Image 1 (cartoon, rainbow, N blue to C red):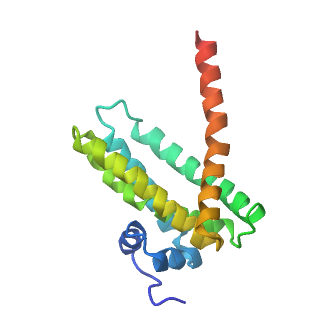
Image 2: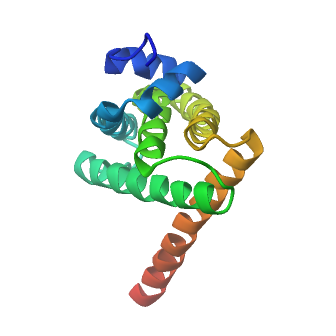
Length: 175
């Protein structure tokens, strides 16, 4: 077991945000860190909701529900794709924990309501999250960086395309 085991959620969030590979390895192997990962997802959802004030953002309650559902579904899809298509070696819990902690840079979205600065921060956080998720998937699934990118992209498409179609169908039926 790593000497970093048992670090606080804040310390782990810092390591994950700094794209520290040992932090991702630590949370991958610490089966008690799932609650912390859920805490990260919730904290980021609240920060993002606050940052969206004045921009037609989601209500905090709905944003929290969507954040958890999205985290669970997307992690499950990435687990399935990574282990079946790319022969990764992981449990769903390992993927769930690392992807949860990869959301850590999203706490900076809290400044999203500030004109100009908020938009720049949200853009930077978007790319930062992409890098963090690739590292999370790579470490959890024990696959190459290219396969981690492909796993994340395919998982995202499988999740988002049906939602877009349902949204378009809903908009069509509403008129």
